[in-house]
Length: 318
Image 1 (cartoon, rainbow, N blue to C red):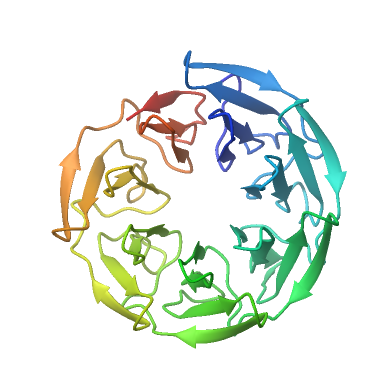
Image 2 (cartoon, rainbow, N blue to C red):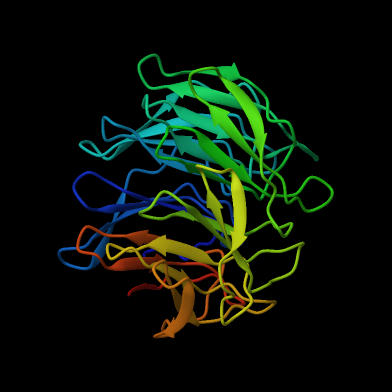
């Protein structure tokens, strides 16, 4: 990449390119760049109106990318839209609540659900919806538990599963958002409290949660069954890790990369949903955490940036 960065976002566009936005490298960044998988190079694109990191980025049905919240010397409520056809950013409606380390989920009705995060020094249980038709945000039902460093997964039935996180203590609770009713219901709790973990939706509709664990790296993983609302152990990873990434591959396997306990690592491993087991795979060329991983149309996974004692501009393909 042209700029070293961590805590950034990476969004796959309709044309197959990957848009990387903002982040941090000792300075708050407003820059953005595009990866072209056909030729394997990066080009700079329009800079955002506001520098930010620990924000979210969501690809909308019309192809635009919505960036919301984050942090830049203070918590941000602002949001902006990237238009791929022009390579430019425009300001859109601000969120009702300033937040960072939140999650943004794309819903079946094409709205974006923002959940939790930190607002100032306090974790939030609030949630709100972005309407691409009106470019506005509206509050929706609040979660039962305030949380950040959590995950959110859109299920096949349209519900959104939120897991774990932190609000002064690490959480094992999980809850479901009902789009039709705009309300939350608790569901089965995970076996292990965790934050800085990952959640991956499998081909059979289950959700695989990996790593994290009470502020320390762990190698445990568990599966959520949407039909029963229960969790079961899912084989342990070979390496304890947090600040890692997890990518669902075209063959249904899940690739976990980097993170690890304390210092960043280069190890990677694959989860096989058919056997419920983990196997090591080729290590990345560089150790990294706070990076991104994007599954491309050609089936490869693009890993970008992160930190391994210094911020990185390197990228690699699995």
